[in-house]
Length: 543
Image (cartoon, rainbow, N blue to C red):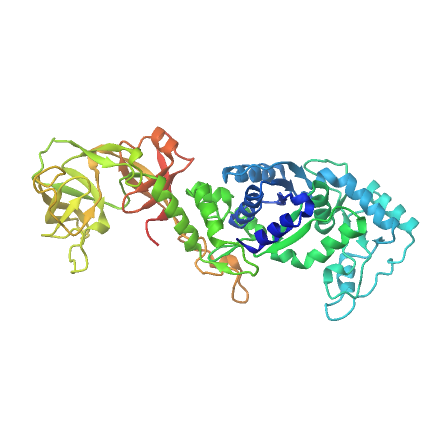
């Protein structure tokens, strides 16, 4: 049980909010969700499920300049893909009329005023935490003048940036958010839902708590950077005499080798450092999905990370571990050779083709078996042969034996090189008594390697992904440099591989998740067609 659940269980025991639990996930639709949001999704929806409560989806759409229906649609898709369904769907814009009325109420109560200062003047007037700020020269306008100006702001009489509505709280507060925070700003911009109805828009701090209140949220769970906003959250609820949810903060998810800033992720997309929001190198949920991560792996990751009260940095290898753990149980096995060299079995019959039984998933008996053609000429991985092998290299070398997976034991006799000294052919002999079921099938050798038959395989494009950044903390830059200077130039390598001929487009696009035996887990990319299969490497078999 984490500290948030302890608070909730105590509230239930004390019959607070009639012992009900109602949470919400409130993203701003100004970008695609990332792995950090996934943790918040799992937390908010998970708590609602655990305590038989409700969890809303609320889109915090108070800034029309940055928001778009594309982002709204992607947010919904990602939440449902993770396995959750919201009880109610709301938008902050649903409450614009009520928020406006509450703003007028605060003006009438002498708790808000229209300020004509520029943003620069307002920022300067707030001062620093150790010294009181300077009151605005417009702070003591009459209620009547403030109401008149605010209504004219709404009517569109003033240009952007010329006036704001501020709460009148305490310009000497050590909490800078209490120093007459801005409640409304003028923005002559069409909104994705309300069109041109409004030209003034509420700030996050004025919209968020009231939206929670309207929806009857009991526990407003958010990340630690909003801890300093909590007194303001409370102040607005109390000043308006409305239902007062409890805000609880937890540590946000920070991963090494990863950028979480939506602004910077947007920059990567717009400046074509990546191929869109769903680029498999991105930490976005849609990027992780396209790379081949499963909802179960991400949910397990969120649960394993847990809920903390203080920020820390999680090693991305934990996310990779969770992917391996889930895919090991579910991914269908197949053989693929990514860096091929031809292996010729000299004593194998020229035109013979045998069908070998191969296991689809040793972790799942119900996955069954498949038939794989075996012939005289095979592709094997170049790294599985070494001409001058030391004692620690157990795979194929001259005069050394290995087992071909699902097939026979072979022994290398000689190799053929081209004019550049590169090995083009590896020749060997096979022992026909070492096939499964034969007298010598249990004879032990030190290594087993995989293969695909030259004449009974097909080409596929394989995209090998590495970490997008080559340093653990991409934001920690030398003077004069940015996070972009820490991009990994080898984060994507595209190569041609040879895969089993039974791996058809229909099979690949239906099953999607595969383990390329001895290599790693791969996912059938949406770019795949009948003519060309495309696979994304999700994660290697081992760290």
